[in-house]
Image 1: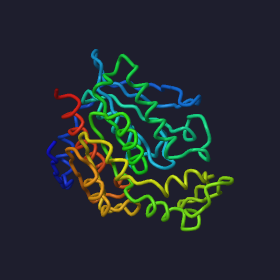
Image 2: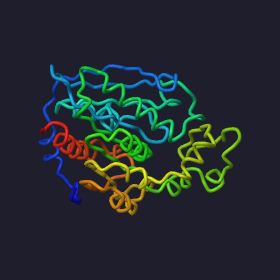
Image 3: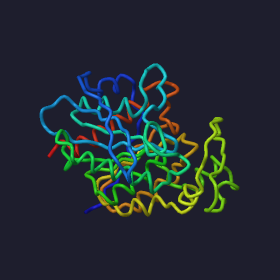
Image 4: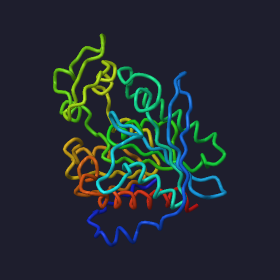
Length: 295
């Protein structure tokens, strides 16, 4: 397959974004549950109003992320909930899950690892393929932040029709050393979880196996196992994930790809409102629609 590289600037006027967003349509949300290694994973499934099996995108969060999210300024929605609603208007279903140890799912975050999160994603795909309301042969995976390499690991196993990375971690040592400091990142792999305070003041118990996996994680290697269509969206103002690492991801990927950039931070400028996020949702929706609907 010939590699196609295309870079799009996301400097869209608010009026153009509004015009691109589909008119509001009814969609249905329901809480779903499935088992992974004997533990319950909880998710929110958003379904478009259609009598036909719908294509679907699995949405994977980043470090400490969960379905509750936080509201975009001026709205009552989080980024994934807003995307799920707007993509349902375009005929695309979605599932966003709490990893085991986060949100409403079973388990302890101190026991979570990158591998366990990838296992949750693979379990979610099996769940989606078994639901007759969904078309498991038209499936995409999306990952935000640490969810990026997790999504790449899931895609390597499941080979979906499309893969999307939103500000996906490309240099874990740089990102997580910035979070935790050198001492935590150098912790021995054996022993009790570490008590860590996140930069915004949240105390957590961080498992040593998670630290060891973050040290060993190579997002480019994870991505190299997937050769299908890829969308990489990266903010130039993201201080947690550097745009400098995107080229290495692109070089590792053997298939067709699209790179979308904007002057956005790690959370898509949602503290200023939904404008930048809406542009990203539209661009991603176009990418998904072209690969999941137009067949």
